[in-house]
Image (cartoon, rainbow, N blue to C red; front, side, top):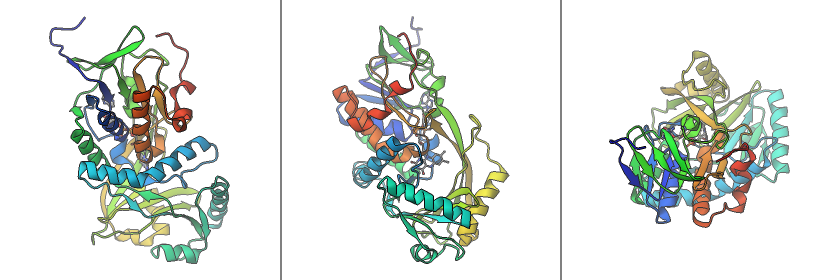
Length: 386
Ligand SMILES: Cc1cc2nc3c(=O)[nH]c(=O)nc-3n(C[C@H](O)[C@H](O)[C@H](O)COP(=O)(O)OP(=O)(O)OC[C@H]3O[C@@H](n4cnc5c(N)ncnc54)[C@H](O)[C@@H]3O)c2cc1C
């Protein structure tokens, strides 16, 4: 029963969450001619604003997730055209830069580990080559002379994730997406199909609802137990520095293994430098601590001594949305019209474009593109009655 205050508004599609994943879905759905609203009480303040913006299918490749490597490679291949289209339609920059990534080894055991990683990357057919210290320093002269060698992944890129969020917002608005700065408290479901969403003051109807609320999706009511896989927050503390000269600090993305710990340094065109990041299982904790700040700066300074000269701009934490198998969930649920775009973990910036594309294709044709099928929610959903 609706309360007297409730107003019922109708859309063709409602997207819950306006991080890069929700915005990309909203934009692409709107381009299909649908009337779309995106709900978010604090737009662009989630993980999307915190991330580093590396587009890194090669140096993120890990031992067990071949399906994710394939999706990441597809996404990286599409990024140059995606960035051009987004910049054109939003009239805003994204900070896309084709810069390559160096993965440098600090000591001899770091070197052994990275040589093995390079072999694994090559075994997957990825574009990674092993470089001597001299070759690495020719690619980036700011690297310490003591570096033991490392991997060069020429095809990796970066974007400025904050510019990206802003460009996506603008493109979505230009395409007709309505932004509603409210939290969705519940999804309305009836007779096995989605009817819309509820906020504190109103109910909005829509035959299609896309849940893209990141790690906070579990707080939304009205969803049958087990329908939406558990999404857990994985904390990342990350430092932002600034080059006073206002020019690029180190040209490629620099990753390093330093006495077994990983660190990365991503330099922006405007002199901004991002140093990241911790990976911590601490629930919804957004505090930052001196120990993490010390370790990130210490390890970054060991490979790029010039980092000491940079100004400290910001030290924050974000929450990566992760599923239990660390792969995203994209696709339809057992409730008609209720779609998921969740759990992009460490690669959500990279995967935003392909996720929007897959969700729009599903809405239009009723099925996911074949390349997205491994990420359909069935693999994690429990048996439920709707
Ligand atoms: C330190 C760090 C570094 C990273 N580096 C990279 C990188 O280099 N490259 C890369 O590809 N990825 C990176 N990532 C991962 C990437 O940032 C995430 O995968 C991506 O931002 C997830 O986007 P999202 O839209 O799903 O979530 P979010 O950006 O968290 O957006 C979810 C949104 O949903 C909203 N919301 C929540 N509940 C509700 C509700 N009930 N109603 C309405 N709205 C709601 C929130 O307000 C939020 O705005 C990094 C992440 C972190 C934390």
